[in-house]
Length: 251
Image 1 (cartoon, rainbow, N blue to C red):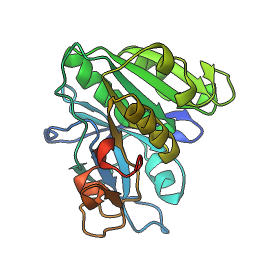
Image 2 (image 1 turned 60 degrees about the vertical axis):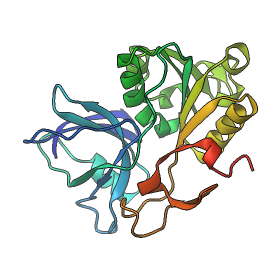
Image 3 (image 1 turned 180 degrees about the horizontal axis):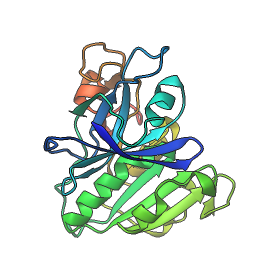
């Protein structure tokens, strides 16, 4: 893949737009990419990164990279014209075959908002009007807010109250004031478990994109195993998206 643009969103987040000399394959929201961290002498395994957006018209794949270590730092340092070694698309994505009249909420925290932009775009194209509930530490940490606002209605929470309502996403008044038929979520595990609990208690179908450590991305190394009602499953191959009723979070 060739870097078309590397845009710094915050001090710790970069948006990479990638393209290829050949047509990119079809992709589903929720799938991910395993990226080789060229340039990092201390990083031996690929880094799994959610597909932020697939732009078929421009033959582009977007990756939202959170810089948390040497590997992601090397990936985020790529400049226009540089190449990235990528394996994609991997995993299973979100369900998007839902009734257009459904009231749908997409809940994301931190860099977990990444796959929700692609999902929101696909839902909108299918006639669904998505709402987004995005959580961050501060106003400066809210990622791609304008793009989300172009896709659907956006609600914000920040831990310090610098934007939207103060607190965590599960404290937002929208959850008490409105009802939903479907919830999708991605972000830190405690947040997703709280969202899944809310959905479970209110009998709302919910899908979560898990962020377990994934080394190979193909189900071979078994380091991303998650316990489910169907036994131990590999998040990279059987997920990363799961119906939360299949997880043991509410058991």
